[in-house]
Image (cartoon, rainbow, N blue to C red; front, side, top):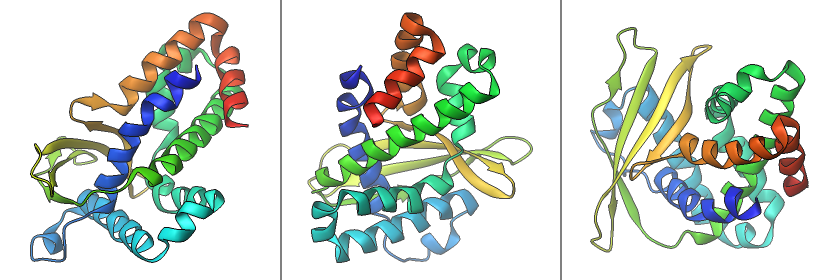
Length: 210
């Protein structure tokens, strides 16, 4: 379970961190970003500042790293939506308390994994924003990004799926090089649900988080 829910995610979250960190430098293009793109850009600027000024503290203070994850990233993630997507039918069968407990433990899991990935940031990247894809009503978008690596490696395609919730753009999935965060976790969680149901999954996640 620990390997399925944690270690296998580190490279995924490392890349996610890099995508959020090394934004495009200020330019005419960055000033023309649409609302959802600007959310990604704002996160980039904040994280870039932290990595420049607090590198030593990031290495020495795990609590500070988790605090940054909660303050900078989590407000822009719709955890209720993500939780419903990763659990699928199990979410619809769960009662209100189980949904609340699962969402809480899932958020803790993501914060811990996200925090660990901070220590794998070494390379220089740049981001190119591609045209948005919007639904007919304009309340759901796909923010498309191409990550350009300084070492000349192949560009990485990234998709942020976001929707407008209470007048704020929030993400509910990210797809990196064809790998979806939601789909990846859904597979691992489904195996645990088959073993012990939603109660068993929540118990196991709580043990790992603690």
